[in-house]
Image 1 (cartoon, rainbow, N blue to C red):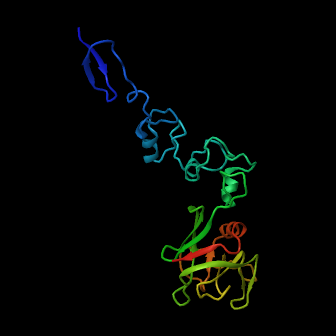
Image 2 (image 1 turned 30 degrees about the vertical axis):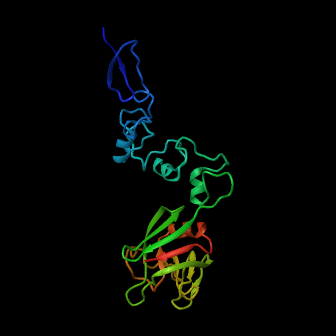
Amino acid sequence: MKRYIIDTAGKIIFGSGLLFLVLFSVCLRPAAAEELDFDGDGYSDEVELASGYSPYNPEPVKITVSDMDSDGLSDYWERQFGTDPFRSDTDGDGFRDLDEIDRAYDPLSKEEKRLSQLIEIDLKKQLMTYLVGGRPWKEWAVSTGKTSMPTPRGEFKIVNKSLKPWSRAYGLWMPYWLGLGGDGLRNGSIGIHELPVWPGGYREGEDHLGQPVSHGCIRLGVGAARYLYELVEVGTAVVIK
């Protein structure tokens, strides 16, 4: 009577003696990426991610919307920053992951370890991207310089900040001012600021975001300018391209 042994490749070998089931490659091998199903919903993590769904949520919820630990940080950003999607405070330092990332602190370290901050401005797209730890954290439409007064391209830094400075040249307020300098640019000659306000209270250019109509500065909408002003410091890099 012939007996069989299954080898590690899963092949049947003829031989004598007892039947040995060598399962190292069959049952004990690590699961392939296409077989992982973290949330047990019947779809592999690979398929869910490729389709834009959260691999942590058994319900069919997009990864940019799903927030399994209800900390305000979507499962998408949890993956981007390597944080625990089921714990609102991954490093256990008493601060939510969202709050740490928002303020450019490492959510994986109990120490006060900072993440890099970078502001990129795309003149063609009229778009500002605020990057934290090299990741595009926020995006806003902007209004940069008109053709006769173009916003310069280059690599600059924030050289000064002012809550609501007055422009003597144009006779208006420029809230949440972030002055730029470096790369041949005279310090503070242009800056990033909220849509300007005239003395009578009229806010200029509310319908101009996305269009190059400024006097060379980079205008941001209400809310976005304050957010950026409060979170970036003097010395933060600004790339205009």
